Length: 329
Image (cartoon, rainbow, N blue to C red; front, side, top):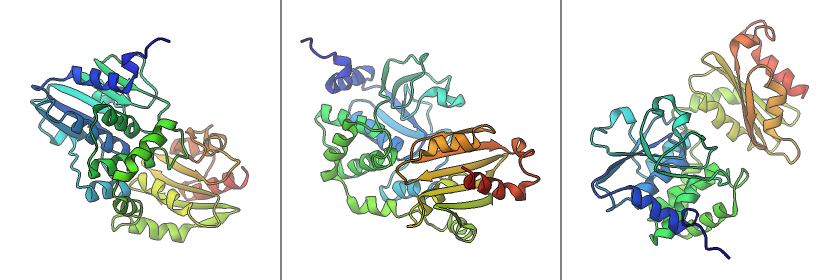
């Protein structure tokens, strides 16, 4: 039996990662901030402790979702915008839970480290690359790095990684592997569960209270589907939060929330049933007019308003258009 390739063993990956950096390096870890990305960046920063001169974590997006904001607040995490951070002394760039080709503004950045679980860019060439598509969360991968390093994560970091796995696997209802389960089990004894509970119960806050108020007013049931049309919205993430929240209703097997954001109609689908697939339903109902797809339990469609001119007379009819699609599916 041949010995395992060092580059594919946990200790081998950890050793290869450390070979990329030196004690003179100033590292900047870039993320598209969500729980998995934030936790993974914190983990990488901890692994580089005393191995490099300094490590920064910067985000390239706005943080709007109330649960993400709660995670940052309750775990006391600081993640500044890239444009507001002093990166003049950065010697190496890293990215976790994403890749440069996902962001036009980052395509010319000279990355040294990429750790991700999304489909790889075949043209991506960096000194250190660890991309494992089968994993449900990068937080699981980072937990393996900690085990390989023989380092126990702090309560704060373990809680962040635990929550990162929970959210990216949607409590193991999305694609995941045994490695995700193992990481989850390893972290559990080290986690502050009360903070997890507080973060997960933070859907409603002062910023989105008006959206919830309107959603309760607009809610209608079409069979077992809770449907809400929010009209024009300032934040598309609000539609996602509402869909997740109203799926909790006892009578709802489906929740579909729509709204107009910019020049697009955004439709969020959530499914708690056994048979139908939200991704397939999204493509079936809305795929001909725009982009649509997702997973068994969660999907999204985006339709240019200009494509709806033949389907609806005016914007006020969009709610009826989506409702008819739901009724006739």
